[in-house]
Length: 219
Image (cartoon, rainbow, N blue to C red; front, side):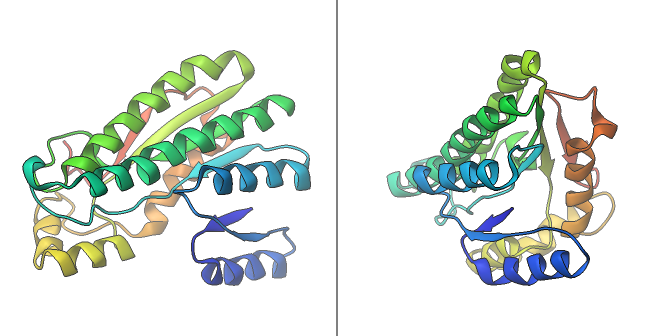
């Protein structure tokens, strides 16, 4: 069950999965709308009868770049709604379905920005750090139900979000690359591989972990 704000790209991926003999659906999702988030999770439960894994990978970049004193209330509200509350709502809905099936695994995408100060993106960093805390707490709360909860903290990754940030702050891509010991941004697949491992039975004894995927930038 694939869900995002723009469903066109997901439709192509779902078609590829179905073409390979798999089962896939693509749904529109608005992370800022708790009802939309719950509907997608509940539909997954109705269609498949269970939920074995959930990858909560949504985020929005902070619109206003600058220190705390110039960060607007509107920016803070959006960061809360998308980068924290959406995960809170999704996780609670996912846990309900997973309990019915005997357990499952949840992975949340946080950020390297959750592990250090964020002079230019304070609201973004604050919500991502809050997500780390929620991930660890939910892992303890839900372990008796067979539900594992982990997070990943990617560094600079070659995504549309970085393109948006570069438009707002020209030169930021070069700065990010310079801060990475491996000397490049991550490809999305490299981040996804870590999430896939955490969701799989190969990580059956891993819960409450927040795993860096940052090319050494946070070391």
